[in-house]
Image (cartoon, rainbow, N blue to C red; front, side):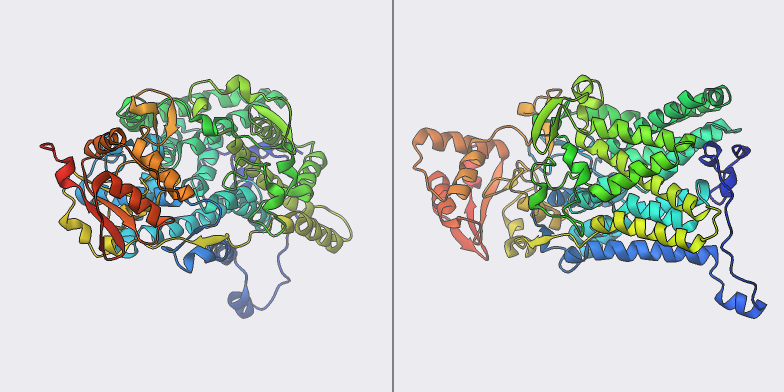
Amino acid sequence: MTPAEPRGDSTPDADVSGGPLSVLVDEPPVATDDPEPVAPAVRRRWRWTPRRQDLAVYGVFLLAALWVTSGIWADPAGRVAALYSSDPAQVQFFLAHSVRVVLHGEYPFYTDQFNYPDGVNLMANTAILALGIPMVPVTLLFGPAVSFVTLVTLGLAGTAAAWYRVLSRHLVRNRLAAAVGGWFCGFSPAMLSHANWHPNIISQFLLPFIVWRVLVLTRSTRPFRDGVLLALLVTAQAFVNEEILLFTALACGVFLFAVVVQQRERWAAAWRPLGVGLAVCAVLAGALLAYPLWVQFAGPMAYHGLSDTVRDYGNDIAAFFTPGSATLGGNERANVNLAPNYSEENAFFGWSLSLLAVGIVVWLRREVVVRALGATGLFFAVLSLGERVSWWDRDLITGPWELLVKLPLLDAVVPTRFGLITTVVVGVLLALAVERAAALRVVERRTVRTLTAAGLVFALLPVAPMPLRVTTRPAVPKFITADRWRQYVGPDQTLVSVPVPAMGNTDPMRWAASTDLAFKIPGGYFLAPRNGVTGDPGRFGGRPSGIGELLAEVESTGRTPKLDDRQRRRFLDELRHWRAAIVVLPLNEQNAEPLRRTVEQLVGPARQELDVWLWDVRTLTSPSA
């Protein structure tokens, strides 16, 4: 078979035979599944048109996303991931920041509303402006908690729908095949793992179109125009998640290299339009992103490299053969130590799907695109193992990531997430396999369809999505929701919670988000340079805090320490540095009584106001004091 003749243009509704991906695919004859002729009136009334098929697929994806997030939708403000709860509070804080950007013209790339007075570099903390700004009406009407679950739901459904759209228009003719591929790209175990924590990671609905536009460039007759379109997509994705954008660029590069290695003659026709288009993209996207990237890498509170906490996150080899925790066949206890944590299960295909993926590559090995996909998926699966290759939590050898981890840009990558690229590769392979099976010219076509359906059920049922496990979390105190704090806290003062906001205590970030960040807080959960020195390696949280560490220990142990005068002076200095106006302890806080006694040793007796213990410390922290 010969490749389809390339066309000079490609629109979203272009015929599949001329799509940019199809140029790489040796397409077999495709049998038609049109129904038998019927009366015109009946055909008009009952015909299952392509448009209706698309709408049905999109509807299924949306219902599946609502099913997955149903536990959060039941009470968006009062429920959170059962195993880890820091990231949702951070995202809600960023959503409230987007409101301030739109309504008050606040600077979008930096804020001192938390980690006061040092502030936080938001460009270096994935502030999701491309998601938060469109969600401003929802955030204003219903609050950041509803915006958060809305983003998660639309992220899952939108990613699946986007891959279905691109696959059905530019790779496969069979819409069922495209739906299977889109389903796995949107609801894979890796996507489910991130769903309760990282809406910026699961919002991948721009990626299929970025990949499509890159492939269009390889045969474009208008590379300048196509380069501009690609630049706009790249710029938008940069404000969703830069790490996923980097993964997309790396995956496209490896895939195209794998194609050219097999068929070098393609390079002669592709290099000129590809080079021109990428150059145009680099210039335009570089101009649009120049200032935000300068802020990220050289602006206030910029850091270089990730915290050591996540730098060596890698997948265990066994993770590729085990179902994810959030799937039908998953088991949280069985997955212990196979991933860095439950929010980073970036493989977990299960035995059946892993074997099927390998089987598809072997079956369709004569197709250039399949061999290139197989090489790409394997390459990034190996990188996802991290610096140390392990099998069932037993270290085997040093991984190739050890050689790359210190390179620019790659030093800010969490290696386990390379498994997300392998996930997309598997989704595309599934789409190709379903179409090839449907196109087989055999006598017993019904048998082939039955076997194909059985194979998909066998592979995909164990990793079918289940509702995300959630747990309740403390409500925002009435002291905050009733605006009682306003009579104490001025514009350049902070509300200090007990315990102090940190990675393990993000509830005060939700308090601030519920008021559209009307008051400042010290500390919080974010990435910043060590010791607050711009340009230093990154770490989670701001400068070390003596009072923060003390109160965190009291909360965890329930023991009240006896403080001396030196400790009191040191801790009061921290309150002055934060320009604290009030110190607030919720009555229902864990070990609230030991915490109250500890704070009373520092600043005197507390008084109860609504549902909190309150200390007015303005006289102790004013400049005159």
